[in-house]
Amino acid sequence: MSTDLTPPGRRPRVLHLTQPVDGGVARVVTDLVRAQLADGMDVAAVCPDSPLTTRLRSLGAHVRTWEATRSPGPSLVREVRQLADIVGHMRPDLVHAHSAKAGLAGRLAVRGRIPTVFQPHAWSFEAVGGSTAALALRWERWAARWASRVICVSEAERDTGVNAGIRGRWTVVPNGIDPERFRPADAAPVRARLAPLDKVDADAPLVVCVGRLCRQKGQDVLLRAWDAVGRRVPGARLVLVGDGPDGERLRSAAPRSVLFAGAVADAAPWYQAADLVVLPSRWEGMALAPLEAMACARPVVVTDVDGARESLPPSLAGRCLVPPEDPRALARTMAALLLDPPLRASLGDRARRHVLSLHDVRHTARAVAGVYRDLLGARPAVSGAQPLRPAAGGAEADRTTQRVEHSEHRESIQS
Image: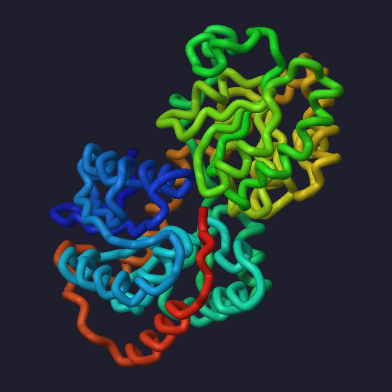
């Protein structure tokens, strides 16, 4: 795949920053790094030491580890300083910061001296409440000056930012997935290979939810809905795929018909094993799990939050979209689909065709490359950008760092 981003004799150096090292953000970073390396770019990444660092190195990226927690807190000043040192040493031509934490620390470290792309992957101020939400919103409004471009994964995510008073140069690039990796398969043999499904009746109706076990993804709402589904669809099983801070609490509240698969390296077999996939999120930018499930020709049920409606083909919205935090509506929709196999097959087929036309990861990579090309066109796209030096306004930035540092917020601001 050629993007014409690499002129003869020049290899622009792109540096991806991320703190989440699992879930959707990590998969987006991995897909972009893979595509950009294939296109001849000099690609580097900075993230906490994790399986993600190993995966990115195996692709051929230059990777530096960053000692950063998931949430802002007392370590933020140290994290920003460490990140500034790393960026100064690696001398990228462009920085692409993913998610709230890397967007916070990365923009404080770089402060606009290098073309900077910020991709929120859902806004930080939606993830929290009270004074912490107000602080996060003030930060996003103020830090917009240090983003050369803000990439949103849906029109709704961009509209949320605009309506919140964040001013910037916006580009919407919908998330994409690999349709070769996520493809249809017969459910029965897949179920037989998956523990704990190998001990479940092969004919049992199966609902799968793939996502980090946290408040954002709404598995608690799903569990509240599940008893009603079980009454209408006897023998139905629910599998939660993933791990996270709410895992212990969810396990303690789950009935015996709910199975926990834990974190998995490859979610594709779980989509293929499912009759129905559900993601009852409280907020999103545009989640990958529904796109991956649809690529496997499985119908999905999602909540009507930012990006979710846009991820569905119009013909699925009436059948598969439910209000957030409404277990009754969620139960009715899941039960109705489980009881109608022909409808599920029809919806799954339409879902697959929709993803192939609009959410192929190759489309996403080309669109992001176009953003880079636009930004680097105003600057020589050569390796070896000048090292960072202290900039005017640093004291103001440090005061903001201190304000965030002293926040009592300990909840993850980005899943």
